Image 1 (cartoon, rainbow, N blue to C red):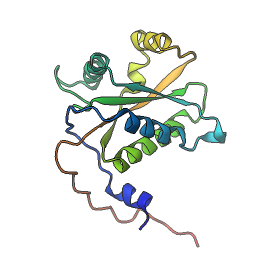
Image 2: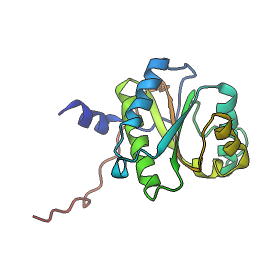
Image 3: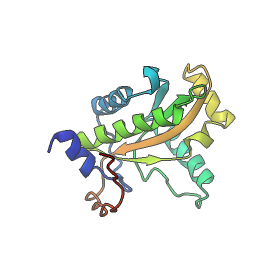
Image 4: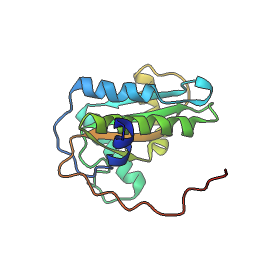
Length: 175
């Protein structure tokens, strides 16, 4: 089995991270993997905001918790020190699909580098808020962007979860 297919089979969503910050070069490689995701008509209509600032990360966690309806203090990012936020151009009809491919590439890249990851939703709701639209402007990001997802990244605190059995009846051949 080749390395890419092995990574696809072995990667798991991590729900408990160590506080240790991954190396910048690893974060850069994960982001680069996202930049190479397929996109509709090659338009590359997605961007990634890499959050390593602890205060901003915790602020995002708190608003994500509130949007998700959890009790105050719950961390929907499970302690991950890096949050890679994928956003897509609101004018792109394929924004959700393109952003999803970016997320998938980044999660596989994290796994291949010995890091854990998990896709966390509610980026759409966050980046509809004026405060986070201002954050984009403060970062020099122009245009209208829709939040697709958060790729929470860090070192897994514990063993990888066991894979669930794959459900039967999900492949149909038309030969």
